[in-house]
Length: 360
Image 1: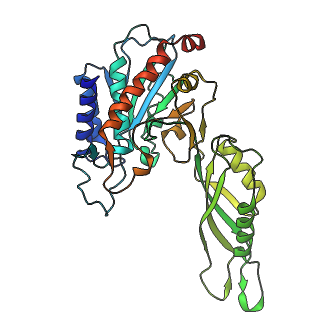
Image 2: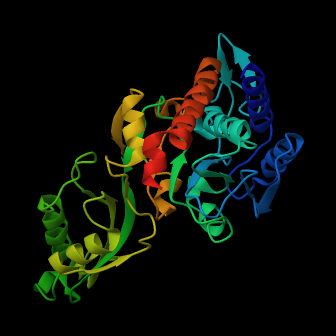
Image 3: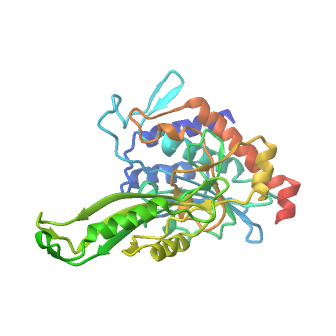
């Protein structure tokens, strides 16, 4: 265990010191690919995604996905430390991507290596170190799903203080256009599209969906942009506004879109419906085992690669989401060590327990 933890932390230090902004992760993909090969893991690469399956993979068994990402956001101007230097001090490891989600990634890689050569597991394991998570990119995990074996359920590594997010909000961005009729402002002509838009925005502000999520609460609608008019004396014929929609497992994104369209006079189009909410049923064998092990369950408001996965997933990992995308980002070394231990304990129970075998 100590050797595995040491290897994981050493890998994280290398990842921190190798810039990997979204769409520019080729060098960290090289590192991860080489690290797996050095540990005698047969692995594959698709774009900047690296994946592998356990040595004794059996197509007749269900498969668990272990996934986290190796891309990062751009460092902010308020960094006081070099974001691309792994600085270890006072039990912390500083550096861009250390917390989001490098600590989770190397912990899952270590967990996968621990089980790689195990025989007679009740489940297969597939590891995916994904790219473009921070931008939900087309060449991220979505691009590799057709290449890896079919997945039954997954663990997505994100910093959760090792609490278990059993649900995650989805996202839609709506482009709305209110249509009026142009006219001269002084002669009270036309139909002002701004007023139509304001009426629709007020409708959204007061609209309540019938169903709510037990872990995520209500769907959140926020009007964030509005644009109309060019001249002070001309009634605008169109008014454009943008609505940020944070969806829950109570409805699919397509259902939410249809309900909003039915409520508004304005034309409503979604930029995409692909970032779906997620939820794992509480009677799932993984959650029953997690409950026995004392995990705390919650619903996550932040987006991850879960949104692109159609099978049940939970979000779990060392580190704290509150540190993500902040200056002088860090993770505690102890968090990584404990994260590896807890991941291994959870997978051990899941792949050897009576409940898991009966659920196959």
